[in-house]
Image (cartoon, rainbow, N blue to C red; front, side):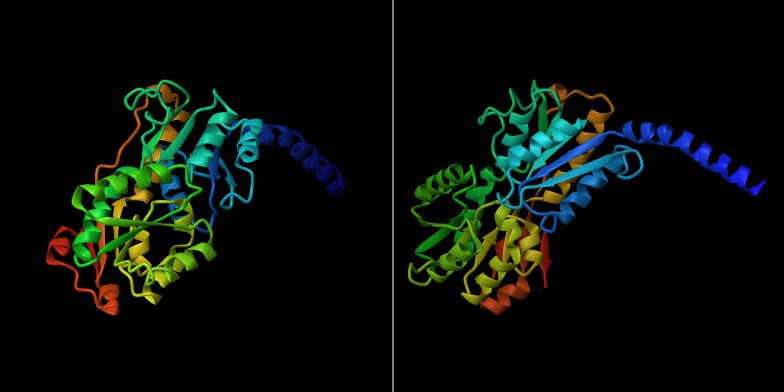
Length: 326
């Protein structure tokens, strides 16, 4: 009797396997394409999942996420994007730099793509218009390029006696030329000398900071760039080692010990992208979903770091600060 019961059990399980597989196949898959690393973007992935959850999708329950990481260009993004298309994902989230966005765009014209962009998506030809993108791409702007002049204003207020202010950019970032033009134009209006410094690797970042004293740089403005996000700890340590005030683009830098940051909230942008992804899974069309823009920009000041650097932060900046770390 026991043997017959065992055979029946095995038979019932075998009959259930195809049903379970079919159910699993029906779970929508979201492709997550990013040019950096999972370690760097862990908090933003969590924010993306939060947005998906608010839209009714929980990873591992009624949705699957296929993560593809470019590791700062060491793995081919076009290959990663093609792999997501071949797998038949329902939506692609492309972020971590323009390279990932362009790879996703080149890989498909039919699968919906949600992007996080730092430049003007209309000006670059990514979408037809902000209100009605018109194709298979929509997303969230983090307003990276447009905030460069404001960071210059903060740097000049912080280091009022500085004869030269440096702009540290990643020359491999497709937005670097636009960023550089923005800050040079803003500097010319106020008669400020700007020195541009390049760093596309960790060694080049070390070299850039080592040259600050020779070039008599009074303050540094950091470009908003995914690679720089990945070496935030190194950049904060370099700023401390060479005792130079740096205006960073993200709150995460100030929390890690950077002097000051000004920019949009990247975690909030990923949360919004998660909500958009959920809406698309429910049937909304990318062509009709307007590009979202930040409603708030955060100024964060780390007074502990200011004290260590011997810098007195102007009261005018402290009054504007959204957060002061002491």
